[in-house]
Image (cartoon, rainbow, N blue to C red):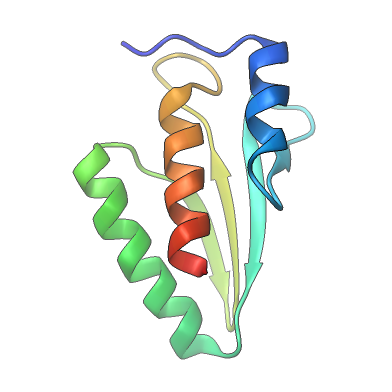
Length: 96
């Protein structure tokens, strides 16, 4: 099992993740991605889903038209871990 990041380690990691913030009331990080249209949003989700599956680490997310809201937390660890940071970095890279 992956260990939860300390509050300080999470803050430091978020400093290198543009657009990601702590989710209020949870030990989680989140970001809202906005794309040109539904096709771009769905393409992002498809590529992110393949990456998440390879990592065996899956996001909580919601899609409405061109907007994708993502929340990451490692449920087995009860909070944010290095897996969440890695998936957030991957999602930022996919989104461009």
